[in-house]
Amino acid sequence: MGKEKAQNQSLPSTEKAPINSEQQKIVEWLKKVRFRKQLFGGVSEADVWKKIDELNKLYDAALTAERIRYETLLAENKTGILSPEERQGDG
Image 1 (cartoon, helix red, strand yellow):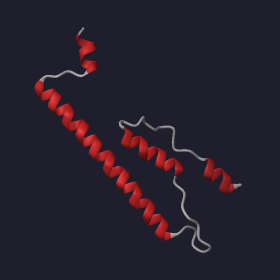
Image 2 (cartoon, one colour; image 1 turned 30 degrees about the vertical axis):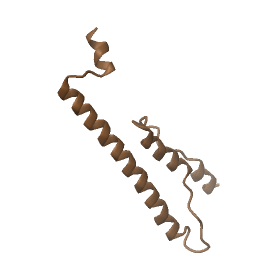
Image 3 (tube, one colour; image 1 turned 180 degrees about the vertical axis):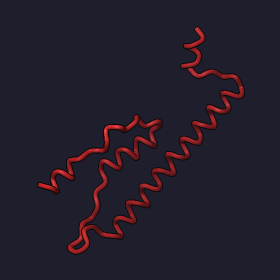
Image 4 (tube, helix red, strand yellow; image 1 turned 45 degrees about the horizontal axis):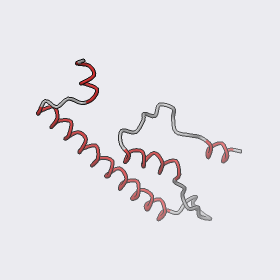
């Protein structure tokens, strides 16, 4: 029963909506990730390191996307271009 309960637990309800598609990929990956089991020691260490590498690549992609978004917002702010939300506030 303990194993079933642990497998059915979800992430905390304090989750925020992903900002971009790269963050959504991380969320989906975390929901699907499973580790290869071993007879002794629980899970395969090599498999764990492989999954950590995959997760790191997903985070790198999300960070790159967020940097692009941030730089775009800074450039818009410097040039005086307003976002759709800001335009609605002026009218």
